[in-house]
Length: 237
Image (cartoon, rainbow, N blue to C red; front, top):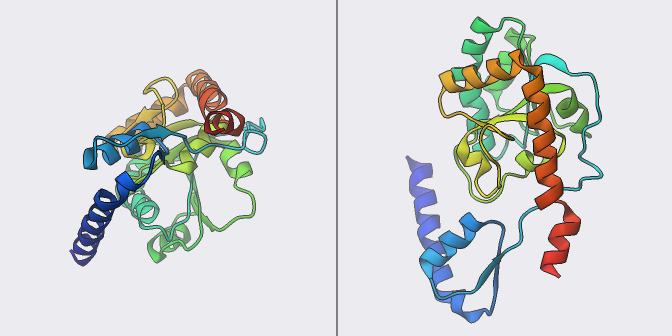
């Protein structure tokens, strides 16, 4: 409750500051339509334009590593509380269901400063692997069958989702994790908001490799069309 109170105070301070200062500028650049709408809720008279976060498509691309058919992956700094809370939730609520229904499932968690609870689970269950910081996240993403992102908090565009889509990953995520990204459910992402929904979506993708492949191709095309640096740079210019 202390954190909630603290972030409430911070939110109110930021909103007060924005309301006071917004009209001092001729143009506001936001990262998504969602961000623009929230800014215009504070002052509808402002001029704002979306320049989305992007991906280096020459660095993040499908490398065609043979996939581990029952392997999941998440990548994101675990000191940041939305990432940390997401993976603690996944480990506590979703992972036991997955292990019960899909005994040969495996999970790779990438990210600096993993909490003790994840490290302890990794000791008890060698199918749940916690790697901490890695120099190159791409091999882990490339060989995974499904990218999972159960983030339910935090503002802005989740760059980890953009990276996974650029790598051509079939992705199961909470809708909040995809805020500000022009994904289409059942085309380039599956949404889940409960342990049962995560189990259902992951099991479906595991059982249907053709669907995984088509979803991954659609994800990559979305990045090429809307989130490649060249396209974004031209719009900004």
